[in-house]
Image (cartoon, rainbow, N blue to C red; front, top):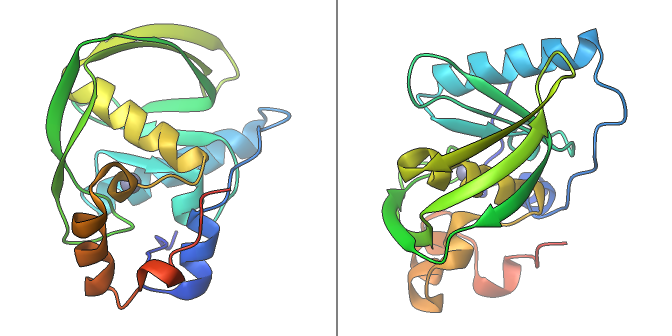
Length: 169
Ligand SMILES: [Zn+2]
């Protein structure tokens, strides 16, 4: 699967759109999840969301340790008031990294690729990656959490002007 990046106008506009829930989790969905995991690993990423491969569907994959995880139609149920900061990057914004503060812990409910619901508590890097990927489903990129100055600098590396950067919708 090709990974969409912000430097290509059509791809950027898709990355800014809100993804839709997956109506039925079928064998096709499981195959999609498998392809996304392969693409994430090949790209040396630790997370990948549907819009990043051009699919406006609410699915993302995460791999921190050995076992990849698939989140379909996720809902973040709770987040902690405590924040933590990690240097984030994104396969759709290659080569750019910046510190982002997010809630340090969260509880999330989703369905796996077999169509089974699950709820987990996450903290540390896993909590950050989940929030980063969840943002992608709403068209939000990690650079939206930075100051205007920092965002403009990163966009500039891809020849995107602040005016040429669409609103998330
Ligand atoms: Zn990303």
